[in-house]
Length: 235
Image (cartoon, rainbow, N blue to C red; front, top):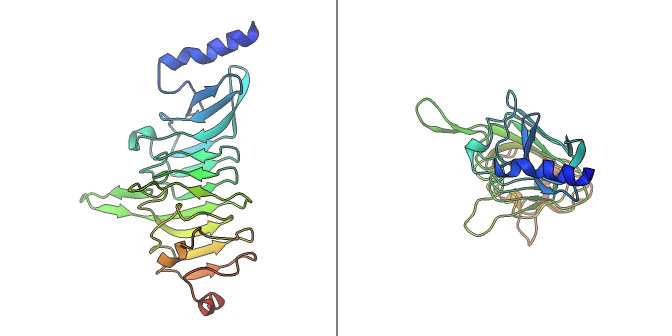
């Protein structure tokens, strides 16, 4: 009987809104009342620009596992985020989840396996008082891990980090060739010791790094495609 009441309590808010419950300014939609899983969804309202995506969340005297960050519909999904923390637990970031934000630094934990199209699109981009589009520097930290971080970029759709002025990147694990594109802004690139490849199918994000000033290469990556070996030795 208690389990039935808990399930009914979880289901009650579903008809009223796009999310089922909110905790500490983060909105969640329940995926399974049996497995006790949920996903972060639209309607999240971080306080003072700071947003923490937890690995688990307590609701109705039960602990639910946060398995992912749901698809966004654009700027209305969040207030402007400047400080984003994702705890190690969620496994994916859907398309447009953090589009049009003002995140200065994002750390992607080892649990995240997939970031879909425009997941962080147009981050740190905004219009000034003259209605000119301004893109500000953005730092990305992909924390150390053994699993490849996959980007999803269907034909004619943006890359996960499209239109982002990434100036500093720490790459702690291998990635495919669908995560990044267009690194004319990248100045500081660190490849961690666990990385064996920076792309797949012969493509390389390093091809676009025309502004690179500092490159640090980890122990397991012997060759960075599209950069001369003598250039790597000098950096």
